[in-house]
Amino acid sequence: MKRKRKHAALSGPPLLEAVLEDFRSFLSPGDFSRLLMELERPLHPSLRLNLLKTEPGDAAIQALSKKYGWQVEGVPFCPTGWWVRQARNAVSRTIEHRLGQYYIQDAASMLPPELFNWVDCPFPLILDMAASPGGKTTHLIDRSSDRGLVIANDSSKSRITALRLVLQSWGAVGVAVTSFPGEHFGEWYPGTFDRVLLDAPCSMQGLRTTENHPMRPITSRERDSLAARQVRLLESALRAASIGGQVVYSTCTLTPEENEGVLESVLQRHRDAFKIIDLSERLPRPAPALQSANGQTFSPQVSGAVRLWPHIFGTAGFFAALLVKTAPFDTHNFTPPVRSLSDAGLIKLPSSEQTSLAGRLLDGYGFDLLTLLERFHWVLYRRGDALFTLPHRLLLQFSGLPFVTAGLSIGEFTPAGFALSHEWAARFEKNCPAGRLCIPQERVPAWLRGEDLHGQTAPQNLPGKIALVEDEAGTYLGRGRVLADRLKNLLPSRLIL
Image (cartoon, rainbow, N blue to C red):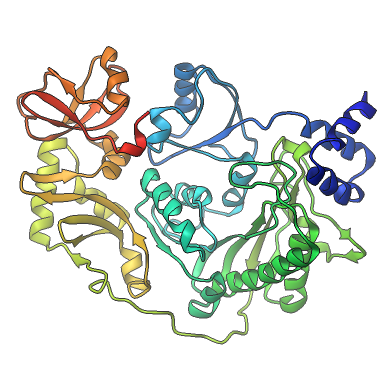
């Protein structure tokens, strides 16, 4: 039986067959056989719950499972991650997904943010050096409870739109999106960040094809070029970290040149400036890094990293390491580019207008804006008629750094009054006991198709105003403007099912 399975796996796509042969020598015969058997199984979809919009614990996933006929299993190294083994309704076709209550993500990619120590860092300053499409960035925001500041950077301008939309959907406030080569941050901001995530650009040889990580042919020259850049990026990440700060280095590839080889190269150059943490006790099953590969023996510290072969947890292939900076790096400091907030069109909202707005939100929705701003250290800034919530730490330390976008839109001033934004309502609707409108269950499908609801009755205090629409079970369904003859559907077009 094993011989048949082995033959079936190796008679698959030529690219996978070639990659498997490259990796055979890194595994025992038994483990290689288990790997082949695992690759015959489907890679089930997995999701991670948004703790900004759902309560911790199992209640949210249980409610979703009951509603959509899911059979779920927890991801062992991520408390908010779940595999969906069976589903009556696809995980991508729910209103909860469209409203950012969970993120569809390969389970292996949930590992890096879980490796950081978050207990001693209540308001962390975080750098995500290669952030797009944003899954790990949203995870960093969740683990820090959106109380810190994440600089979400990606050097590829073509990938910034996807990153921006994911962060808006998640409801993140403590974030600024930038687009610079990651190598610059160690020179611009040495010794600055409490946590740095480098999910490095790689060859994507993870043995399983996913939407974000397709397998593709890779030459030895391209692999060596990627490894050289990964070394530069990791050195920049370590320079940017504070003394005692933590850096997670990860890739979605299993090639040792881009994983253990990168750690070894940086260790040889800066052995006294950081240490690699042994992660052997952090996972329920052993997943050690290689001790040697391709004729090279690695330093003992390197084996403390994590190498997720697909057969260990049923994921795509993945690699991750946790580093702690212990001493300064020699570096040449350079001045980062500068653009003032006023040049970006942002002006701080005067306190009198802030008080007036807070009163309107309290009267209309029961929402206590002033307490929220104080608790999270957020500030209101206006650009034209649009109003944004920005993290105060961004203004203190990075007000001059040119960013693509920052914070979260709270709404806009209109002739009819202040209109609450979709992003803000989706994040904070649970903090709004008033201004809600329940629609009958039989009208929910039409609403989710983006249709206006004619003849929908509403409380007398709502005409002309934006209501928070919900179904009879209390599920939030988006915003609607209450008009004399109908409830106008304000669901963004990208959310219509």
